[in-house]
Amino acid sequence: MAAINVVRKRGVSIWAGHNKLAFDYWFLLAAAALLVIGFLMVYSTTFDLGDRFKDNPVYYVTRQMTAMALGIGVIVVIMQFDYHALTYISVPLIAFTCIVLFLMNLFGQMDAYGAVRTLSDGSYQPSELAKLASIIYVSHWLSSKGDRIREMKFGLIPFGIICGVIFGLIVAQPALSAASLILIINFTLFFVAGADLKQLLVAGAFAAAGVVIMMLVLPHASQRVDDYLIAVRDPLQAGYQVRQTLAALANGGFWGVGLGQGNQKFGPLPLAHTDGVFAILGEETGLVGSVGVILLFGFLIWRGFRVANHARDPFGFLLAVGITAWIGYQALINIAVITAIIPFTGMPMPFLSYGGSSMLMTLVGIGILLNISRDGVGGRQPNRRQPVSNRQD
Image 1: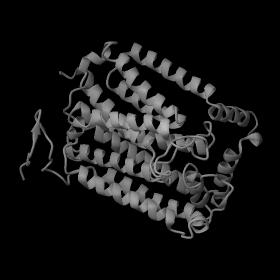
Image 2 (image 1 turned 120 degrees about the horizontal axis):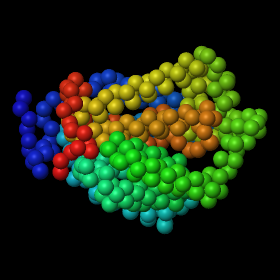
Image 3 (image 1 turned 60 degrees about the vertical axis):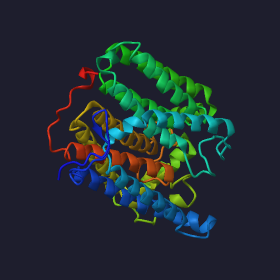
Image 4 (image 1 turned 135 degrees about the horizontal axis):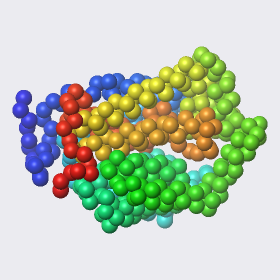
């Protein structure tokens, strides 16, 4: 059926009326499999918490299911539009996000860990919205620059200001891990957009210096680095959380103790249902289950980059790269933390960790990727877009 273009702006169809079902089914299947695993792990790690604190074993999993359902509904809505419609909301979205972060830092209430990271009694985390909003905005901004991105006044300087504002607002919470993740994602987009090598080196140096300074200034960050260095010298002196995550993985062995049968989630491992869910996965499904989930993430990321490679324009390419990098980096950091490769930090595992904001924003990102893949006819058509750095304005 011919495309039904209800509204046209700058030559872009807002409504997408053709090939609605022609998207990357393998990508969708991988995301669905991770959702199912995530549902099982959230229930496994929260039924005791729900029973003890809410008198309802399914309290937390019900909330997570609500976020999943809402996210799936958003995917359905997103699939009705051309993803280029996001270019019209990129500026208002990032402005709204920055305003919320700023007001939260001024008027928000501290949580039990001395941070101001959530709204509505912990129900919403604006930093999760900031991840997606920054990807949409930076992708739109970079795709509009063409060759001018190689010029300092059009490339590095405004890019540094954009990243600096977002980074500063999130660090002020403080949430160094989320701020660093957003910085890494935006730097990746700057790189693939064709930034000059000198700009990349300068940006990388400033970014690294900023992270190091924050680690030295923020007491909890410097303490985690010190704990990590102590653990490297003597594993027996590792911090409590590190010891418990490694104990969970060791308890699981090769095959695991069985789904729902792990012991670490009943108290020894703090935040087992959020930051530590991969450790519980390792305990209950063993090395086999852990490697299986890693391979599933790897497959999802491969398909995500395949979607990017088949995008028809620079904006779609950068948007797909950004969302895929977001999911990949976040999963990689979580696994590295659980296995004590890097200092311990709070980073939820996409799809698996409990958290409505994280789940909802991740599914919105999945919906956008599916939309881009549909525009490229499910990744079956060759990439006909021009390189970002050669785009004509």
